[in-house]
Image (cartoon, rainbow, N blue to C red):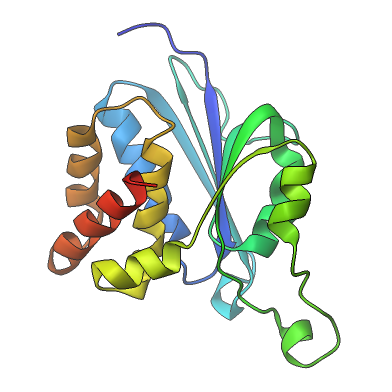
Length: 193
C-alpha cells in the first residue's frame, strides 16, 4: 500500500437523512483497505431536524477525528443550507459534493426567515469546486427516498480512488439486507454523476 497522508471528509446534513449510515460506510470502506480511520459524530438537535455532522479521517496514521476550519479535503452535504453552514471547514482546493435538496428549517416554515435560493451559485462564486446533484430524484429512481445518502456515496466514490468492489462490500456490511438492492442501484446512479 502506498503512503497516504491523512485525508478529511465532513458529512453534513439534517437528522434523518442518513449521514450516520454514510459515515459507517466510509469507516468500513477505509478500514477494509488497511487505513487507520477515525470517525466522530455530532448529533446536535438531529431528532428535531437539526444539523448532524460527521468527521471521517483516514490515512496511514490518524491521531484525532476532529476536523478544524479550513482542513476538510471534501465536504459531502445532504442539504444546501448545511453546505453553506460548513463551507468554512473546506480547505483551499477542496471539493464540495452537495445534494440540491432544500429542507426548510422552522423559522422559514413559520415565515420568520427566508431560505436563500442561490446557495450553490454563491459557493461556486467563491471559486470552490462543487458537484451539485439532485440526490433525492436519483434515490427515488432507485426505489427509496431514504437512499439519498448512498447516492451521495456513489458521487463521492468518483473522487476517492478505491475500487468499486470495496465500496459494494462496505454497502453490504452497513445497510440492511432488505434495502441492499435499492442501495446498490442508488450508489450506481450516484457514480454516474
